[in-house]
Length: 144
Image (cartoon, rainbow, N blue to C red; front, side, top):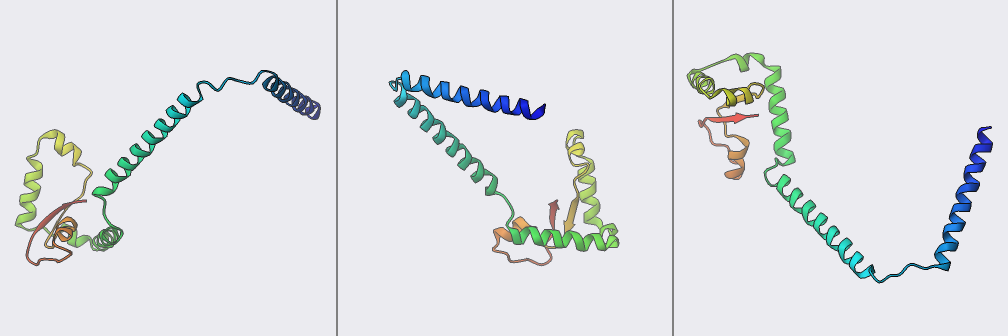
């Protein structure tokens, strides 16, 4: 029974195609508005390409390079394997924690699940600004 339905659908589709092709040949469409249609399509494509280009440019503008991202991942893994390092706290760490605690409620809520790392080396952004040179004995606060 399913084969009979499929054969009927194929026959109906073929008949509709032949009838449509016959009508197209007997009464061809007018192409008087074709120039306007082509202009409209070309403008839409140009707008889409421009929007895509600007979007890609904006997303890549402040993104990390692959080596910087790999260094961040490696450092995070090292810190994860050394939980005692994360628990050590000095006076500056306390000041940072107090400053975060004094933020308005909406900012504290936004930072609730954001890890804050206090480091004695330059942040990735600082290294990028100084050509990758790490300056010793300088404290950088990084929000990961």
